[in-house]
Image (tube, rainbow, N blue to C red):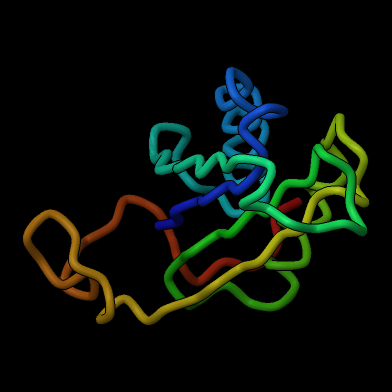
Length: 128
């Protein structure tokens, strides 16, 4: 399970959500083995005055990946590297944060997530 939140400026990124979502989903599928259809992406596009980062360009993006604990450090490195390798944007303008939580901290489909039977693995080693 992974939920992705993407923050960026509305005047730069509006209308490009699918482009960014497809890129990130492809990386999650390839690096972590998530099913292609498991996509939970939210775009929080802000006015220029609401995203103040004078050391970055107007195209600055913040990507937060919230997921179950279980992936080892090499798998997390592999995901971050995959995203940067595939970016068609300046990597200086993209920051990625992986935020992990135990499954017991999630409620999904009326259940505590640690009681779910998932069709994919959470304890992931880097692929390939």
